[in-house]
Length: 453
Image (cartoon, rainbow, N blue to C red):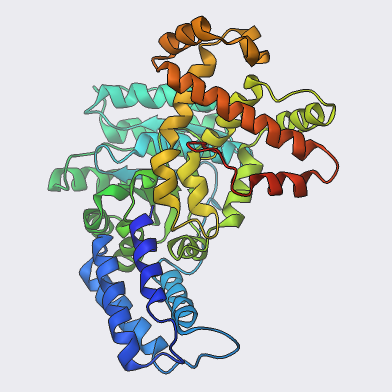
């Protein structure tokens, strides 16, 4: 997310090099570029106007001191305003209520409400040890009820059955009784979505809200809908006392306009960002961290937190001991590392959080993208157990079999084997005395092309 905006802002700052301070003259062109960058990111026009004016007022006349360039001074002003625009601080779910704490989830059809409930459930289950039940009030799509049941079983939370022959109100009231009987801490209520905002939908969900009196009323919206995301959030906010917004599919949104518009238009905090369909693809929305990503400064804190949650520490320790003992880096080890990367949101998500990678993201994505990880895993999965342990066994006939089994080409298999060989050499340097220094030295200019690592 924010790829295009990051690049435009970086180019704008570069044009201020050589200036001694920010003035009306030299900032005028810069603000014009920032304005265009925001509009291209699909940020709402009223939001852009107010944002640009705040930057102008905060930046003009700012002295450049202590080796700070005008570009850096402007970046500081822009960063502060971005943080303020998106809500200043992270706001978590507020569950301080007599159990069960009821969370009502609303949104348009296809926004990802049901998957988001599963993601939130897993988060509360893993981090807060909450006892959770979920129920679907979507009586118009039986498939939605089945989907929630499947996801609930996958996450390991209680699913309260419902049927399309029942009314949404009856389902919700019955679910509350069952959640009380089960001594649940949290009850998620999934609501029906529509293809667009309409009166019938709003009336139904208003009645449902009044009946269940939730502690959290969350609006789930597809971030790729840009300005429409902010407008639909406003429509729901007018009908319901929303307590927060969750942006989904942020991994597929290179513009990021929704994240910059929703808070300003609705006045309600963005609480989480959803990425992809995987149950682990959810992260808290921290305005300061997101602002850093937008400005190409990365977000190492979130990356570390994500690693702590997603990386299998036992597996990592096992690999470290294996390498130190002199044993080789097998294709099984490579597969495990690729899977860990997928669990952390993939290459693009990790690049976005690393400082200084904004300008190189496009070039890297063209060579090493999340699809390439999937292809590499498929190739390894087409090998026998012996081939994974001893890659030198893989000759021409085996390569043809592996390529056919994975749906790839022989040259793809060759590329994977070459990458594995190069990684093995890097891992050997890492495992020796002075390993980190040797490892980083080996990385200098030697990252293999098309290598998603």
